[in-house]
Image 1 (tube, helix red, strand yellow):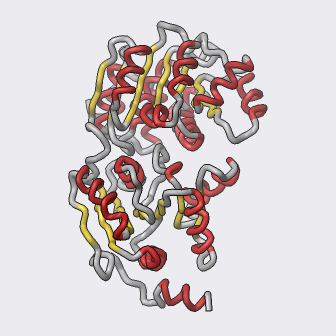
Image 2 (tube, rainbow, N blue to C red):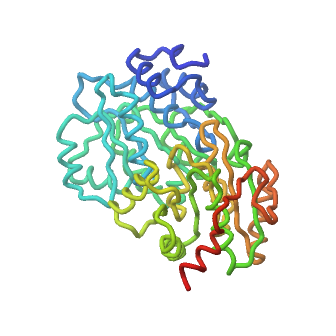
Length: 391
């Protein structure tokens, strides 16, 4: 079976998927949906951008009983942005069945969520802390949950949510179905699954996120004081339709965003210290094309599914090689191609070499013009414009 319409799922779900342009299933979908529909516990491992939300979302929607006015599905995610994204996708998958999904997360007033939970909600997608808050207040009852999904499970463990996950799962029925999706498979994932899952089927579509064949990986060796100018060269290229620019710190992101917005209007910034409305506005402006460049910390490197990101730029080289692959996974998603450019100083070369040692695809060095396929604009260069505006 390669198409969603070949699956034993409700016609209303197929209709929604067709309207969303879903045709042939990706590997993780083809491998995971069948066992989940059969009621099996599943551990799914695949790199980001391969359709994991539909892999668990379609079976989850299929299992909801519309006549039962209770929360029947729970999806735990590591970040508020991913909660919003997954809830939006599930609402779209289930719209012709009138199945309602609610996102609950910190950073926004809890009272609006409490009011929403008093109405009809079939699926809750939430961050562990806010889910526990609702459980403690009695506004979220999990006694009717049929299926629990841990999405980006490795990321949740990295963020210290192990005890929170244990607490939440202890409040769900023991006969529930459990699915866990993760980009990597550290030992702690295995320990977690052994405690909370029954004979799970392991689906390993890719061993990790290191296989990034769809992404052309480039790097440019520059002096630290010339990184800003090198970034400007990249931003001038007409082929850069929409780009994520990653910094390693919140202060660095703020500083870079401040400098860029001093010379152009198509830049937004997102990091963990911004308020939730500020983060939502930055993401919405980027998604809608109101800004072309989004300067981000690694809060945006995982789980965000933003269409049309043609380029990822690493303004700072990450110390953790896996963060590099999480970052560049924001482009080249769902079978599309993408370009990742890393600006590296000599003192960052060791970090880059560790990354190069993990990738299965060659990373090309850029010298002079960024790449022969890039079009150099006829107007004055970014560096010249910056100098002119700061005299």
